Structure formats: C-alpha cells, structure tokens
Length: 481
Image 1: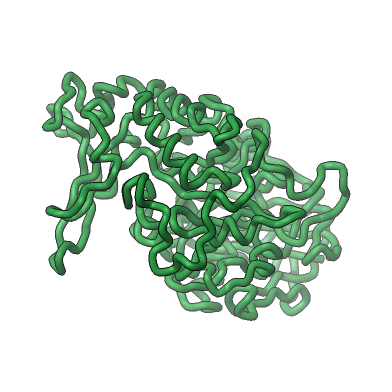
Image 2: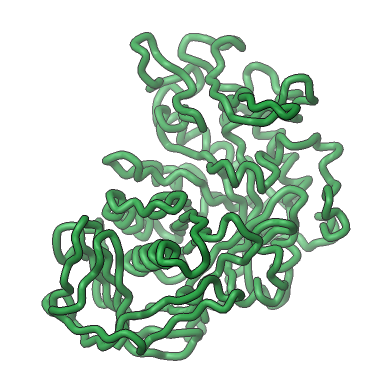
C-alpha cells in the first residue's frame, strides 16, 4: 500500500472513525449518498457488464481508476466514468464511484477500499480508531510463543502530529479471529454493503511477507532475521487459511458473499506467490499486482517476466482476474509518462485474457484527473499466441516477449491485426521478421495525457519495418497493420 493511497482513501476506513459516527461525509458530505439510498447488489456476484452471448466488442479494455470527490476522478462526470471506466475505486465517506456506477443498464462496478490486515494507530493523545478501541489482545498477531502486548508484531508509520514529524505504531490483525471477522463484517455492511467489489489491501500468502509493514519487517527472530512463523500464523498455509476464513465470513446484508480483490501478488521475489489465496475462499475474484511494472515513475524491467508468468498462472484459474496497478506522477504527455503507459499496456496485452485482465494505470496520482487513457480504447482479440504456463511461452529472445492478435479494435471499430512487444533488456533490440506471423505497417503513437485531457492515439503516423524498427531499452511497441 502506498503512502498516497493511505491518505487519499481516509487511510484504513475502519480505523478512521467509529462505527457509530462514520456516516458523515466530511467536507463533501452534501455530495455523499447514504448507503441506505442505494440498491444492494442482491446477487452472489455482481452482474456482468456485457452479456456473454453477445458479439459486441467493448470500446475499451477493462479499466480500473480512482473516482472520488476532491481527489482523483473528481473532475469526471458520471457519464465519463461510465464510458471509460470498468472498475471505479472509492471508499469510506467517498461514494462518488458508487453513485457514478449506480446505473441501469450497469456500465461500471464500484470498488470499496478496505485493509483488514495492517492496523494503523493515530497521533499520541488523540482518540484511537475503533478497531484499536474494540480489540482484545487476541485480535492481533504476536511473535511465536507469545500472546501479550509487548510481543505484538509491530511496525511504524510516518505522520505529522501537532506539526511535528513522528511515527505511530502499525499492528497486524489476526484475520482468522472470529471477533475480528464480526467487527469487519459489521463495518462493511454498515458503510459498503451496496458496493459491487472490495479492495482488500496488504493481503499476502506467506508469513514472511504478511509480517512486513510500511517500514520493514514487523518482527525479528533471535538471529535478527525476519519472522518465518508467528504465534497465530505458524506456517504459510495458516496465513492463506486466515485470509480465506475472513473473506468467506464477509457477506452482504442479504447473505450473499462479498467479492474481493486481494492486493498481494508476490512478484518481488524469485518465486511467484500468493495466487493460492484464490482457492481459500469463493469470495476472492481477483489479484492486484501493485507497483509490479511501474512503481512511482520507475519502470521495473527486472520483473517483466515474473509479472507475465503470474498473469499466465492467474489465467489458468477459472474466472480469476488479474489487476495490473502501476503508479506515476510524471507530467501529462511527457516522455516519461508515455513510456510508463506504453510498457503497462504492452504487458497487459501480452498477458491479456478477455474480461479478466484489468489495467489500473494510476499515472496521474498527483492530480484530480480520471486516469483513463486513449490507449485503453484499443482492444486486442483473436490472439495468435498464448501463455499456457509462463512468460517463456511468448518469448522471442532473451528478455523480449511478443504476442499477436488477429482482430483488434479502437473504440469498438475494427482496425485489423495488432501486436505487443516488450523489451526488458538494457539495450535496444531490432524487431525480427521471424518474431511475427502477421504483417504490420505502423507503430501505435501515443501523445498527450488522459482521455478527458485530450490525449490521443495515432495508428498511422509512425511506420514499422521488420528487421529495422527497434524497441528501446526497457520499453515496448504496439503494432497495427
């Protein structure tokens, strides 16, 4: 979870106010609709946006964007959100996404942010958040062999308290505890029952990574190494089981299960991890890979192959969705921003599964703009190659991957075949004709910022010539006929 996300979503919703007093909307209360005025989803799964029986090609690939009052997305009208966004993010006291997606026929899903894992406290001398006030010691995770306050897993979070920079404690909640589950179920039913999906932050599948907070490891063993086990989470499987128990316990007022996207696809190590969380509960719908390709304006070329393999493994899980979340704040339309957007789009295409790959290109996270981009209006279908198990299935050279599509669309209109290539190496590579099974004549050219700011995609401006056109180091190409 990023510092910006903590601030702009009122941090951890359950920690920001008491369950009795949370309903007010703060400075934008007049714009916030009470949950009681909005319809309940009423089904175990949110309804599909496009019937499976139709042959209609969507006007854009599945897009997730923040849609909040006084923050990202605030400049966007409801009609713009419905037109360009598939998953609109918001949370406690910020129901713009819910209002914008509360349409018939349904054109987007509202996603409510929550973090039931890391418990952030407040400045010294101020009223503690309701979780901390309500919790008994058994609600927290402790070092192995202990169950007391002094041995809670803990970390620190930077704050400004009374104008002075300081740090406050962060604790790890025990998802398997029935009292924790009851507290969280009450919270979500009270403030988020009408939402379609829930973003479950800081959800890992290993003791080592779950016990890792914003400032590093939350506990150390006798050898000064990060913990491989805790009192409540003795093994990696117990962490996964706890998350599954928690998700299964979260139900709407009508008894249907709440649907979660867990934030914790593990590509930061040499091994892909955490996808086993899907099997722990039927309430898990998707996995978020945050900062995996672009992290705070840095393109992470060393992770490209791991991300693609993780996408392939997710695609092999029935109905599982993969969310590619990147963050950046480079100037709109700058070379740096376009490079981030191009790489993110190319990775999404190479691992694309229709309706299940979701792009979350948060590349204006210092603005109030709607982060929906003109390149999102390109929709690839009829793939010529597929990743059956890993990135190696679509590799054409060391550190270079390619995928082609037989029928592609721009804003719903056919544009012929298209392809994506990405180069993770430190040198430019020439696109070999042997890498391609279809002819292409042009490189997709991106200019400007987001769609509502006038950003554009040109399909015939830049020529492509096999055996001559190059992919810059750490970059990508999108090709059309």
